[in-house]
Length: 361
Image (cartoon, rainbow, N blue to C red; front, top):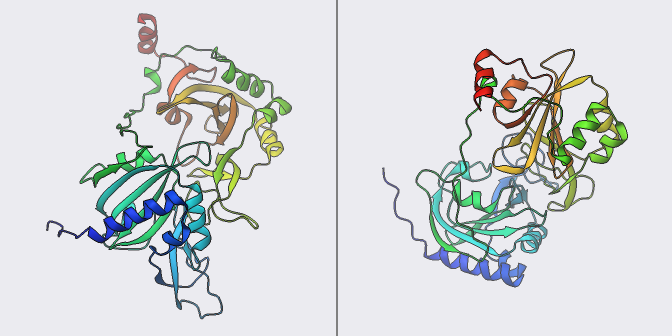
């Protein structure tokens, strides 16, 4: 059945009011637009979706008034005022306004089963030094969700592939979205990058030298944290707030992949450096990361077990993340998703066909 037409008059008016409130820093005006919902209190109940509002003397599952707002993923707040202040503080220039509707899978994990918004207002924020989206979702003339996002605002517009919402307004920060290039994995035997143990790029070769020499102090000096906004939300890769931190506080984290999904930790660089020098490894390959020209990935394999070892993410000459070969991912599979620029000593010997291809080039 075709979707029924929705009267957007109230939501459009709310979007205009929200834009004015954010531009003027008027938290009271923003708070007047939000819609609190009755949500069963349960605190940190483990489930897919955002943490539920805590019970404050009520029996478990007692409905309480709460509003969803968070960093990357929504969290139900009984008193949303501090997070509204944080949203106004972080939201920068208007990026775009979209008119929906969109459905559950666009709603950052909220447990709803029907169309959830009809207007989305996207602002740009660069609190962490990288452009991110700060989004407000509006339905029926009220703000139903605020998200300080993890992604580039361009992706908030470009990610809709089928039945896209209408782009009805662009702001000062808007950039025309372009489709992300598609990357097809390349088989090991088809890679013709040069062999060796150095790339010729000083910022990468410093890392290669430190790992090869198992130089603890040099590795420790190369490790670098990344600023993120902390969150009480659930989800992979979120920087969890700790201690007395408030959601949206700026914290320093380090990317790591010790399981099937990437995550971030509060780094103990001395311990990380020790772990990188404690294993006998050999360089497998160095590759560029598609869609991220400033980043390289270094692949190492254990000299004892060719499915063991680690990966390093290098950005601006610093090691900003580590990983492992897990969930059936081998070095060969990992290399297939990179733009290989160097085949290391652990790279398998060329087949005749690959040798011919390299010679012809």
